[in-house]
Amino acid sequence: MSEQDQITTDPTKPAQRMRAGSMTISATPWIIAAVLLIAMPYLFPSRSALTIMNQMSITIVFALAYNMLLGQGGMLSFGHAVYMGVGGFVAVHVMNLISDTGAPFPMPFLPIVGGLFGMGLAMIVGSFSTRSAGTVFAMISLGVGELIAACSVIIVVFFGGEEGVSGYRDEGLPFFGFDFAQQIEVYYLIAAWLMISALLMYLYSRTPIGRMANAVRDNPERAEFLGYSARWVRYYSFAASGFFAGIAGGLFAINYEILTEENLNTASSGVILLVTFLGGVGFFFGPIIGAIAFTLLQTVLSLHTELWAFYAGVLFVATVMFFPGGLAGLIMMHVPVFQIGKAKQLVLPYFKTLIPGAVAVLGVSALVEMTFHYRHAATGDNEMTVFWTTFDSHAILPWVIALVVTFGALYLTRLNAPSLREAWAEANTPDGGAA
Image (cartoon, rainbow, N blue to C red; front, side, top):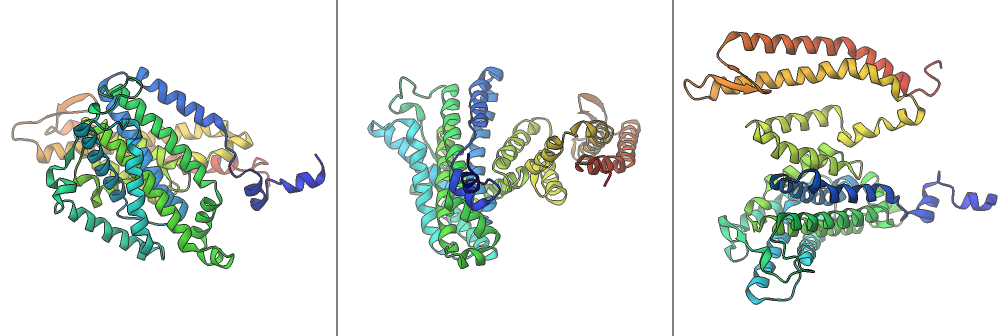
């Protein structure tokens, strides 16, 4: 390769990198993800596991769509659930139309209908909400979300009132012999749309308009100076995000066969904001991690405790305060350590610090559960089970053990924290800290 060719495709120069290979992607992560999605029903064959995985996949699509606004465009929305909800309601109505008229419309294409209507609503709202970002956009999104949520109990013809709108996915035209009456068929349909949607959103982030969304997020004045309209860049991102949110709504309609006011209210918008922040808005795969973690908290943890929402809130607050990059940022901060080849130096410090820290967290959780049971249990119901151990919550000994374990673990964590900081600084120094 000549020197001129090397200069033309210099990967250290962003502008040249965008021109040379902005749409090139590595197929390995996508192949691994596809294999995992195919194998998951065989690893977890129960019906409840399929339901959880379907919910997880739908949440991932919605979180990635929301991250197109927040992570890539810098637009904080408090009402983004309306685009998923409206897309889902339209999908349910089309589902009922197929059932009533026998229209030859295959069920796998139903999410496209939801996506188009979600994008249509986003184009209408975005025409006046994307004129500016920041507080103005956030307040407009909140107002629009509240307005449509209020309309859901007023416009009964479309939203069905408090009962919502239900349908039947198995009464449509079979698609290659599949009528989607079985949960496993629905799982693979949702998994296919998850792969398609994630790939399209990833490719969008690497297009010039996706790159300019990052520029407008970071410095809209400079983007305007370079000749790009910050408003139109935000508008295109908003419309694309509405499309994929509508796809998530269509998948929700197929999976649950019912849509209610809860699917588009402010609480649902707050949940997806929590999910995206928890995973990490600065990374494409951050919302995926956040959706998986939150779904497990909402489904698996809720089977064992009534306080799952409390733990989810504490995790969210701790993430925002101590790990602004989210769980994905926590993972990616270790990449330089592996590149330098010093990851082994962190194994022992992590073991000495994180193990007591985890024990302290479990101890605090045990104290919270014991307090909740002591205050809210029925009269005479003194026995409770925490971490597979049954004991009397009104006795002194369990409280003493929980307090000793918790404070002992906290002491060990605090004692070993300085050595962990030193090991972290040394592991991130290429010359071993000699400089």
